[in-house]
Image (spheres, rainbow, N blue to C red):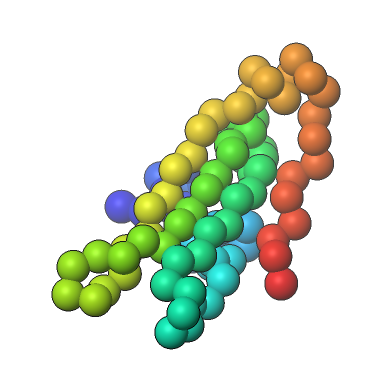
Length: 88
């Protein structure tokens, strides 16, 4: 099960602001890329700081490490920041 199916009401496709969709491309000299986003889930009313990073894996393959942290309490205490705009 993917996160967009589990946490976003059974969505069939990844979210528009999914950090996996916005990782920068890699090339021969840059094997890693990262993307960090602040996402608001309106259905659950939570704020998530999400980071995705390409990492080298065995047999010259790549994997993606995805880390999501609930920052709702920080948002409430500090005043809401606007959600991230996905990179182009």
